[in-house]
Image 1 (tube, rainbow, N blue to C red):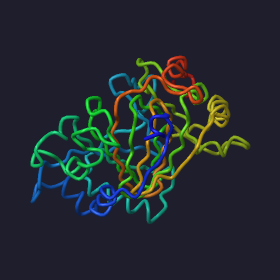
Image 2: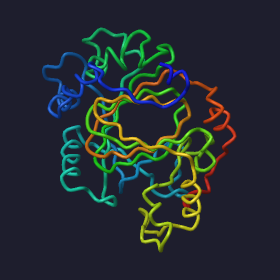
Image 3: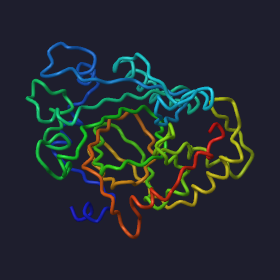
Image 4: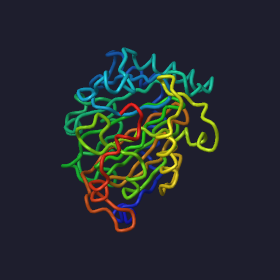
Amino acid sequence: VRFREARLPFKVYDIPDIDAVTQKWTDDYVHRQFDTTDNLEGLQADGLCQESPDHFFAFFVPQLWQTGTFGLPPVRNNDWTYHSWSEHAKYADATSLESDRPHYYWQAGVTKSERFADPEKQSFISRDLKNTLGAEEDNFFVFNIDEQKGIQCRFGERGVTAATHFDAGQNMIAMLTGAKRYILSPPHACPKLGVFNTRESPIFRHSLLNFAHLEYLNGNSTVHDIYGEEMSQRERDWLAEAAEAPALETVLKAGEVMFLPSFWFHYIVSVQKSAQCNVRSGVDRIGTKEFGGAQDINRCGDHAHVHSKF
């Protein structure tokens, strides 16, 4: 609790209720919760699959995306079931799927009110996490019930990379199966990360910098984007800037829970087939003198010129 009150990232583990979920969430069990209505204890869970032409996934606002100006969207939804996604994720693990091949990502979540419903009116996410992320009263994991916005779950396959971004909410992130690598930067690093920071941008809160391209800075570029174009000088310049940003990294493993303070940046790579759920407990706008806070984000501005397509 002292680390949380100090607004510092930290991890905890050896949590019996979380460990129980890591054992319970087998492929067969999760498949039944999403893809069938047979013998369910409660509601069928809602989920959807997204795909990207390569390993890099960036959030965007569809209503603001103009294909004529921006090109193809970074991701799109498809009609896969959880089982279809899971089979491809196993294939990605078995073959060490190359980064330039299509990758797939399964997303799910529950509303802020579902935790208060009767068990037969809850999905497995709320029921299985009822003593941790899905608690009805304040606890260590969700410590401002009135400000929580539900539970979000992300199922990643090997190589899936989520672009650097910040969330305003104070975040508890539970790794339930598999593992993900997190690269974290404090709020005051914002000017170095090429963040789109105006709400009018379709990439609001996110950067399009792919840190996997850092290895190409010291030589001739051989990497191509989804449009067949080589890395631009503009991207090179921004990656060189990002390389100087303060950062720390950790691998979040099954059974571990990480606290991420408001406005901290995170860049996420799925190390293997994985399942992760998180809950947010309201916004902390104060931050710290050492690492910054909301005021640093507000001063950061919009770096829409970071990507050649924008």
